Length: 166
Image (tube, rainbow, N blue to C red; front, side, top):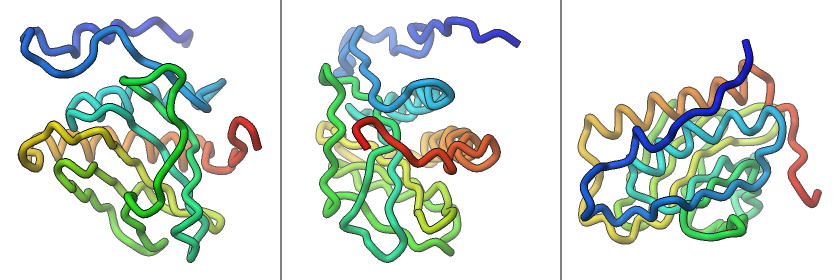
């Protein structure tokens, strides 16, 4: 099956008062198969009312060594690949599926672990949000995060640990 261009505009709010930037989307680390993360990440950023979504990998037992794997940035060009390890909640390899909605401070989803790395989905730039997300939106975010986990672990993209510049 050939890949087709996906029209993301159908997911945009039609309400002109939305604070999300329009027409801006930059990727980092999304070459080849990794480009498949773009759509679920974009939808998660939109639902979380954030500016940037990242798939992160962290060596087990070293939470200060958070490394970006794929970045989708809706607010900057080029995409910001820097990560503040102190801002990202750390997960253990045996944790169950978890979503941590930190309101204005971000949103984290534990995606799983493999071969000494913990994989996390992180959305930041949520400072304009007043409250945590409603339950229905959190469920949608978890569903989309499951797509990302499927790409990592069922398509074995988690085994491709190299990132641009490494």
